[in-house]
Image 1 (cartoon, rainbow, N blue to C red):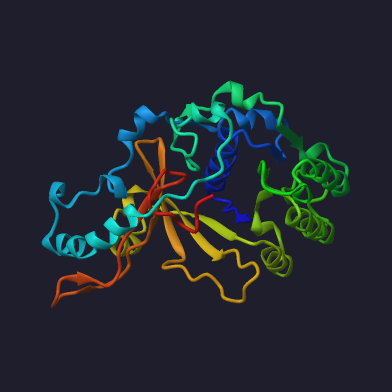
Image 2 (spheres, helix red, strand yellow):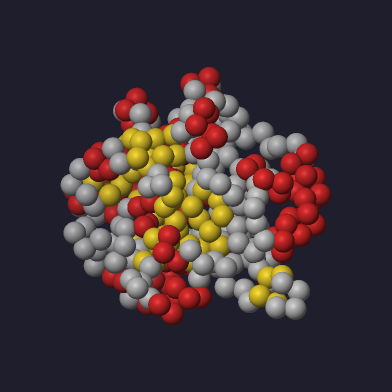
Length: 330
């Protein structure tokens, strides 16, 4: 679940990446939105970058970080040399073999075994992927009640049941602004809560995942807490305050940030040990108006005696083919 911010549409960036990655892998997709024409939103999905464009990935990614090519301070070079052996060991490990589809998916990204793809926000998704038979769109305004929508979701997930054995195909459900005021069920708090609980139960026995965005400001604190309790992963987006001099002095590259992503909760299934992140707040950056970068905020103080920082900054493009995985990959 992604909690929206009324001042920024950054939740749509995450939703676009989630949907685009599914379409590239030829995965069934169910998209529901309060928009009059949900099909129009599909035309805003970013296009995948071909393998020949991989050399244009953002600078600073692990595969482009070479100590001898960086003109940097001696403190970072010292840190790099100390961790170079560790990184080399990681790269020598056999890569995970993700689920691969037919040869059709190999034309996007150059390698059919690639799980994550690079996307260009300036490039639209290929029309052949948008017109696939396994893409369904639902107008939430036209639904009389949530029971009808739940039946539609159940029918969609029935084709992806785990009872068939194995994982032959994964499906994705993307729901935009579930409690939007233009929907008839916007003031039916208990009905929406029941829908989420039923949807989660069906997802547990299906080879599918769902991403739901909601304007949390329209929910009461009581129901907002219950929504977060039902979700496995809870994120929230926030706009960057304009001309905040105090915040600009605390954060590096403040002028390049377009928003923040806060991690409230991560999946904790079949275990009582929660996942502890190195940071809970990340900055959203848009490089060259085409690549969205998720970067950990650098607020660590610097030890003047040693010249070393207590924290590091890690930046990675969303859905990138990176050797280092992240618990936030989707």
